[in-house]
Length: 120
Length: 111
Image (cartoon, one colour):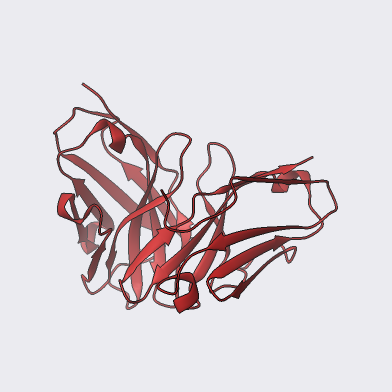
């Protein structure tokens, strides 16, 4: 059974860097074809894909946020970390991490999400 | 503004069928068969309902089906039940640009 859980600060000040961790079980990021992505959802808003990292360290970023995002993995800890620099109140959202594979370009298992508020 | 266009809301009576559309471009929906659909109940994480345009993950009811024509994908829900009331999001992989896009979401109300 695949499970994922997001963790990180609930409140971040504008201009600061937000760092979120996705801790997962039930799969390994060293397995060929496996990936973990980040998706966010502002309150009352739509889903927005942010970034993804594959087992081979291939990284993909949303073009509109690429300059502010960094995604990394720690295979030994079963963790994926997303960093977002220079946050703004518009970055207030629930952040989800999710599992995917190259077999299908969709996200088949999701974490419960973590709400991050950007406010001074 | 989301990359894929969905109707903001749809409604139908129990037992009936509903179709939710998702319109993109030749760079995403029309350019590959990697369209997926997610169901999200209030306060919950999204759940994958359809992948690769028309495939259902194990455990998803066969009342849910997907299709695609040109740049528009569709999710059909037949025999509507109260538990189907939720938000539905489409998503597509963009091969040429190597990233994903989501639709703005559709709120389904089962009257």
